[in-house]
Length: 379
Image (tube, rainbow, N blue to C red):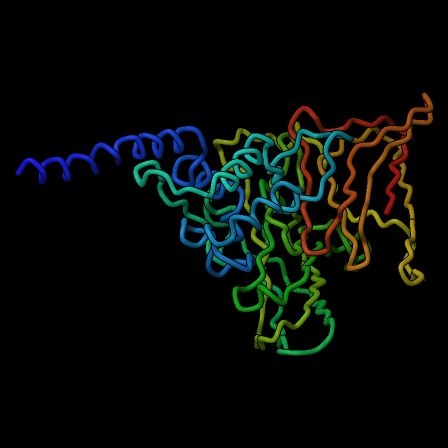
């Protein structure tokens, strides 16, 4: 009996230091349950979930763990989350900034170096809810849109080259109003083949002719909806039309009768918005040149610039670089001839055609430029 008791005691005594060491290791190193799961939720799961564009899902530890070394590499090199905006140059205070905090990057690196431990089940956060493909991104904050305009139907083939669909439709807007937010939404079926979708207003001039008006909205891969900055008015006129420029690139799935939608949210009484006290916001594509082809030699590079000046003071609310497959970088500077000053506002030196972000400056950090200042766009 004594021998039996001793044999049973020694294993118990031997296990005690190991259990303590395991607990110390969890206290010393980050764990998935306590730290990393929250970082993944906030920075990765928007794309890395079933039905979204991420090539793998990151909704739980079992899905994340096999990819831990690659996650560490991409995060440490700042390739993920995908947000092409240079640090330490230009305005850094941005809304909806996808760049991961350095503290979170260090946590991911330390977690993987420690063997990517799970941790304690009770430390896990509750699952985060995300919009499904085909649902309005802004709806979680603003509710469903007040008004929806759809493009005319178009049959998207399963295979082929670039296709453009440019219909005009009645806007259905019966009252001229300033909008609060706008979002362009490809259909769920054609989510993978809708490369970009731009919409503009078409209005009747004094001669009774239909003419192109202001830009309404824009969508490209990686682009979410946009809210109009406080104090600004982007007006949609009554009895107008909407012109579409939709670029499809077939992805192997045929989609008959496809339609792209644009949703509009109006100000409500709680916003205390006064149109008469607002300033006009201009959403416009400022091209770098007059168009035409560029000849880039094999393994070579090409630089081009565009210049735009204003005869009145301007506040810049956002900047969205847009090139195509060959584009690698773009910047926006200003030159003030009154004082001979040139200043970099924003730069993306690692631009990627797969992601099109509208870099919206935080309130109070929007660049203010005086009359006669020139904007210099370089790509």
